Image (tube, rainbow, N blue to C red; front, side):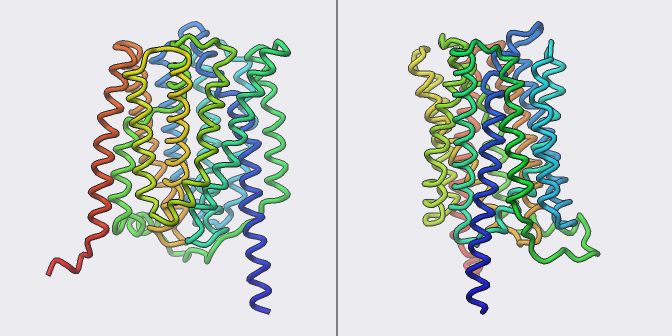
Length: 404
C-alpha cells in the first residue's frame, strides 16, 4: 500500500511540475509579446531615453525582487503557496495591457512596477512549490523543465508580436491589448490544474529574525555574496534589444531578436539542469557567468551590424538560461525545506538590489559614454564574480575539520 501511495504521489508531483510549467508558458507568451517591444516603444515616447530605460527596468525589477522576500516569508508562514501564486499572476496579467494607453515614461514606470509587484508576489512561493514537488536529486532537472516551458512561451510571444505587426498591420499598442488572451489562459490552468504542496508547517512561535538567521548560516551567505556581485553587472535583455536597434535592426524585427534570446534560453535550460545535477550547480553557474562575459565581450569587440546583434542574442540567451535555472535550483541544497520561501525571498532581495544598480549604471553609461563603456563595467563585475565563485568552490571542498 505504501509503495502504491508513493507511486501515486510521484505522478501527482510530475503533474504539478508540468502544470506550473504550462502556466509559465502562457504567462511568458503574454509577457514577452509586451516586453519584446517595450524598449522600442519607450524610446518613441516624449522624454524616453536609454538612461530612463535603464532606470525603469532597474527600479521595477529591484522593487519586485525586494517584495519577493516578503511573499516568500509569508508563504512559509501561512503554507498557502498557491493562493499567493494566483494573486501574483492575476495582477501581472491585468496590468500589462495597460501599456497601450500610456503617453510618457512615468506611466510606463507605473505599469512596469505593478507588473513586477505581481511577479514578486508569485515567484518565491512558486519556486518553493516547485521545489516541494520534486526530490532534491532531481531538482535541477525539474527547474530546467520549468524554465524550458517558460522560455518556449517567451519564444512564441515575440514571434506572434512581430507577425501581427508585419502581416496584420497591428501597432505596438494593439499588441499590448492582445497579450491579455494568453495571460487569461495561464490563470485558468493555474486555478484548475496546479495543486498545493507544502511540507510541515512552521511552528507558530517561529520569528522572522530566527528564520533569516537560520537561512544565512553556513555556505549560503557566501553564495549570496557571489551571486550579488555578478548581478551588479548583469544587465537585463532590454540592452540586448537596444544593441540590435543601434545595429540597424528594424523595429518590427526587434521581437525576433528577443525570440532568439529565448530560443537559446529554452534550448539550454534542461541540459543545464541535468548536467548540474551531475557536476554540481555551482560549476554550472560558473559556465553561465562565462557565457555572459563572452556576450559582453562580443558587444565590445564585434563590428556593429545586424548579424552580430543576433549572435550576441544567442550567447546572452544561453547565459540567461543557465543562470536563471541554476540560481533557483541551487537554493534547496543550502536550506531546510520549511525555510525555502524565506531563502528564495532573501536571494531575490539581494539580487534585485544589485540588479537595480546594474541596469541604472549600464543605462547611464550607455546613454552618456556609449556601449563600450557600459560593456567594460559589466566585464569587470563578471570577472570578479567568476573569481569569487572559484574561491567559493575551493572553500566548500576544504573540510573545516582539516584546521587541526
